[in-house]
Image (cartoon, rainbow, N blue to C red; front, side):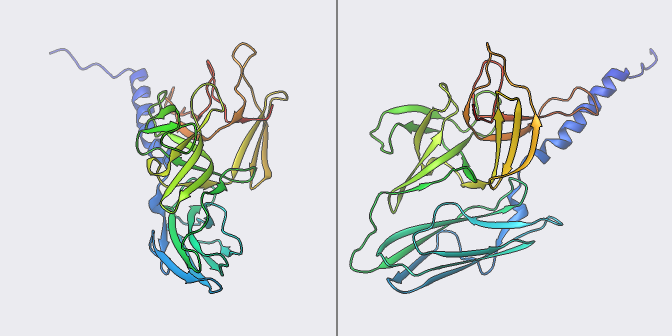
Amino acid sequence: MSPSLPVPSLTRSLLAAAFVLLLLVPAARSDSATVSWASPTPADQAQFSVSTGKSVKLTLSASTAVIGGIVHIAPTQAFPKGVSFNSSDGTVAQASFSWTPETPGDYKVRFTASLVGTTTAAPTLTYAIHVKGTSKTANYPQSYTMTNDKSAHWAPVIRTAVVRAQPSRSSRAVTTLGTRTTDSDTQNLVLILSQLDVSPTQTWYRVRLPILPNNSVGWVQSGYLGDVYRVTTHLYVDRAHFRATLKKNGKVVFTSIVGVGRTIWPTPRGGWRSAPRVSAARGPRDVSTAVTCAASSRVRRCCRSTR
């Protein structure tokens, strides 16, 4: 028998790099199990009935098992007129909702509980409130802004969906959204710009589409998307001055000089959702983190540019 040959150092380095990559990839995913709703929070899809002039009150609580973690409870959309909402952050976050409606009809309110500084969040809670009075239903459609300069909302695509030009099944088809991205085979996410409740049981979302031309938008029925999540961070890329600015709740928290695309391969402008991912390692101590976005260019991806 021939003597055993030592494993080349290059092979050992590659094995070490693969091992490090396998360890780090799961950490790049958010884990909703680390944030959970707690008593006395009502169950998801709970229904409440109240007469005009009478109060309806909800008490919410959410907690995390992460040591030192801070949980924040927030609505995912604008409240009806007259709602009072207060929340306090902490390892166990508390929130109170109080409303004395004046107009009969059917309303929906949604809440999310997230781990501050991360994308980790508990499943979104949806409550239906029926306000009794002289009329049986509220006026429809009802629209809500879901993304502005301080916060944004996104959701995963959980079923292959036909995107429509208008919030109607008979409207022209714009494109088809799959559950996985076409370039990196990761979970397909969409930025939600606005919400339209056509009826108490039918909701459409106006979303930013990851297709050319950039900044394309369309309407998707809510049943094709998963839980809706809220983020308060925006990354602005100023192409003219090579400057990136990170804002949280509308306030600047970080700035840096950045590179952008060349004239022949320009960085696309517009507003995008982004998600971190771990790229291939070039050595046992080299694991790169990239940012994937729903903007298209010949060679680059961009998050949000101002010019």
